[in-house]
Length: 103
Length: 210
Image (cartoon, rainbow over all chains, first blue to last red; front, side, top):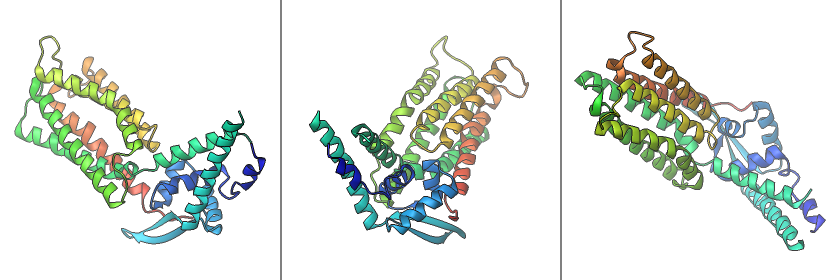
């Protein structure tokens, strides 16, 4: 198995909570903050922190608007985020393949 | 780090992606519609003086459940189409598979009552309580694939069903009897769904990120 493969894993995504956020967003066009929080069972503060990290990396975009006179925050994967997530998953698959090949 | 770890991560990713599918967002409107139809069903039965006991009760409520299921599926399908997502997706199938055994058991109990097979006939309140218990179990099973509140909702049905069964079997309260079976159905499957749906609607969507 090539140890470099592990080094190549995206450090931003390669964190349990952020990986969960990226995975959940990858399967939806858009999710509200509360939907994301409820799905992942995270606290508001924890989710906010990780969303900000992903936002800084350019992987997630956050938009705020009003729905039924109440503020609604929604999160979406950016194209860059979708590409990075795809690359991360591909690399995981590659690692598994390498391990199977070396057995 | 090992290949096992990579495989675990990949499985987690797949599971999370499946869990975030459309049926979650359809839960609130489906619950509200189910609640409204349940209340209307109970109101119509009371208004028309539809009898309890025997085949009329089970036949009537199986029909209401059938209509409610069709309407619920149509709502889910419409939501999936609006979001450009697959309706009969693998997670939706899993939820359906998890609920199916207990729902089927409840349906068959209703059919036995409908056929009024000698010796099997039971009173309508008992049937309602058993339906609640089975439905609670089905919701609890579905809760493993959906939002956490659904498991709790399943437990509530289960416990209320057991309480109703005891109240009925031991005749603990004079007003709790078979003549109020339609009202019990309206409360159990109408009001409870409506309350759950409204709760989801009020708490799950518009919310400001800190």
